[in-house]
Image (cartoon, rainbow, N blue to C red; front, side, top):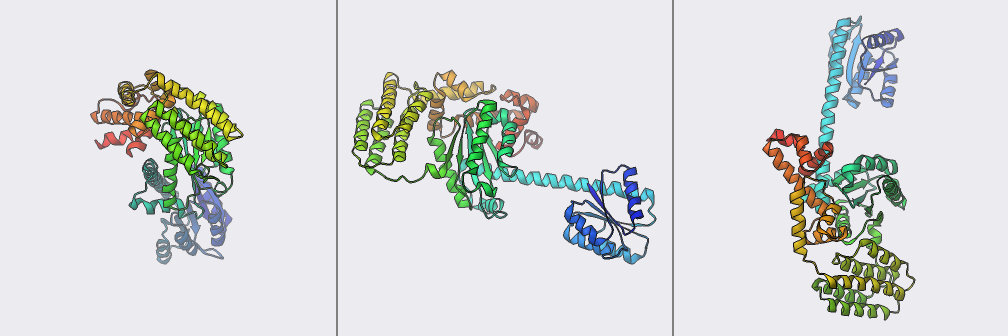
Length: 505
């Protein structure tokens, strides 16, 4: 805390300063010779206590006290003077002084006053901190709800605009980062360290699930150009060096109102459902949804018919529609390379998601070769090889999706006390992680990591309500060795901590 001593006589200031040091009050001392100097000090430093004489040149103590109370009402004001008239005391009260001391100062009275004022400041600080923490948590709860649903309720729109856009007319950008595994459970501190290093302290960070987080960036320099993408690349690179983890990061367009936030969230959720593989990809919403130079409606139609054939899993129909698509593409005079890449990539992904025996690495390698192709013919040849391989795999074995999901859910229900990951589930059902991830989302409408977290959180709530186990035991019983992370995840999920829930019960 800082105390400002104001008196035109240096000896008086030094006397008060000596008393403060003698009784070891936790105060940093600043001095001023008159009211005008004092105001300059308050503008320069964060002052907690103003200790001022009354009679001074330029601006007296009572004028100073009134001005300080008007501009900085949180500062505790102590007025002392050799003049004990009632009029001074009355004016001191009007200036909201916490006390009025007479010179010469009585030591016992001084000590009692200082202890009281310091305690009052500590109490105020605790109240402010609790209020601030509650406000932060309320904001987080609001955004957790919005990010999960990609929808802003009518009564929340004003709050969102106030939080994001009232103080800044430049807007913000939203980043979604999703890791293959439960990254944040183990490496959250490392992530926030690199986040501050590359994007500064003003990024709002929302850890949604053990493998996913949203970042709201409001720093003006990151809202135009490529600087944000460059910093994101450095962030992912350093995280990969330290943890060998891979992630997909999606960067929104500029968001300057609640409707734009909602629109970008819908697009981000759609991209999440369409991409496969991680490999430290950075995807910009604008680039992903950009219109192609040449749009071929015949190709689009043939591609859709092929994807419809995938749904039937009729291998002969799939081969027939695939040949039709390739002929349609080769018949075009002009076609955008980017457009063709997107069409073929989308088809490969759709069939790959239905091919449990195909490894993701094989498909990614094939896709990379296809993207490097210099003409449509070469691109189609590589595409054809990839499709034929997956069709051969499907001919060998067809999977019963609902049976697989049932098996996965039973596994999670049985092993929820373990540190269950995507790889753990994939190994136990003898499928590739990518296929498990896809089929679970397709069948249930949510990611596997979210489902696992839902199960663990519901089990934890039941245990807390039963009241027989300690919180640390419940955390371990739900597969969380790190109790502080369990507490945080529980609060994000239910809006209150495990302790608060138990106290409420």
